[in-house]
Image (cartoon, rainbow, N blue to C red; front, side, top):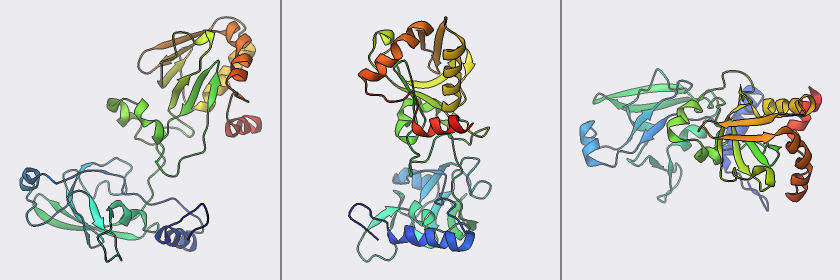
Length: 288
């Protein structure tokens, strides 16, 4: 299915329609929701008894995964719905005669919600077959790569804050990724990032800073909306003092409240910023 600027693969459209017929709504694309390691190393294949076959090793299974408790770390995944998996994690695209290869996740992503999917694994050098219903990945603090949520932002005196989405994943240190690859503890919880620092006199010395925002004036930052509400409260109630931002990495940004209030409009005009916050956040605030 296509138009001048849009192409939708038929399996995706078919899955969408099946979900609507079965459930009356689109519940999201199903996901394997686990991490793998390739088995292209002959030594690694020999270590796990993978002889005369191919597959990939399950290296991590998050608690929210649909396969949690059924598949296990160090299982060697050989087949999904009867389609063999190569040692690099690819399969031949079903229904094609040429060697068109895609990642095996395609077999899960195309499945309608609740459809049984058969996994064949090698566990402790024994073949095991398991049938697990297809489910979408639950919402995580790190949003899925597709589809990306609508852009959201808050700008405070030239400091640009955004919620964590996959395109900004590099701003989170690898050792901290586990802390964001989880479901929100409370509704609306977000990881907030300082994406960039716009050039302005009040921001001299902070231009190179970026990363996860931990606290504002000693209070833990819970979401982008919380940040906007707190900033606007300070603007109204605290004519003096400082805005003190602390990043998870330890760096601090201190802005005098009086100078921030005095110069923010000029900073916005210089950088062609129409509003302090994105339209979605403004709408939420207006309706609260």
